[in-house]
Length: 269
Ligand code: ADP
Image (cartoon, rainbow, N blue to C red; front, side, top):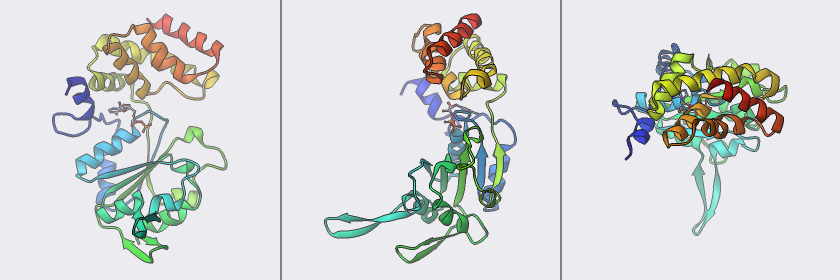
């Protein structure tokens, strides 16, 4: 396996690479020990998914990740009857599997899911910790290892999609943001093996692009995109073109905005 890929997947201790931003590791460990569900808020590409993968590995639990979307129903989480050669059979959804196995279930962008999902999440997120499966008549008691983790990006929220306070109040919550410059540089270097000079340049460029965020763009240049840019550079791509492909084109379709962003890139090089 090539060493850059290896660095991305695991560190020396065998855990996924994750650089903590604050006290989130301790918070997650406490929440898991005390059987509390956790809510993570933050912009896309700031490390939420990586954090959950890291914590799952650290705690030795499997993790089931579900990218929620507006057609995702309770049945997608819990399971459904399928038709096979031998007739119908029950197939667990990822939430049910996680409960049975005492795993971590991570619902990414949970506010996107259909509202009927709250019916299955509520009894799992209070002290009952049960999952009633209406269609099979079973009621599963979540074992101690099970933990529900959900995330959403408050920036995307609208009145219809916001999380109801009655749901939100069932979780311990943490806010994530893009890492501070020094940390972000360490993340880019840790992920790609790029030298500190070019990693530093990317972080400064991100700062300049993020300062434009509220004016022209719906989304800020994320840590994920900086990692992509560094990966292209490490592969021998020209710096300017790497920035265009990873930091400019993904953020806008508007020609004028793209030109303005490239001016920011050129000023930073
Ligand atoms: P999110 O789930 O918030 O959209 P991800 O967890 O997928 O974002 O993070 C995107 C990428 O950014 C990761 O694949 C990783 O390369 C990098 N990353 C961001 N923050 C960190 C961090 N604190 N430690 C290690 N890698 C990070």
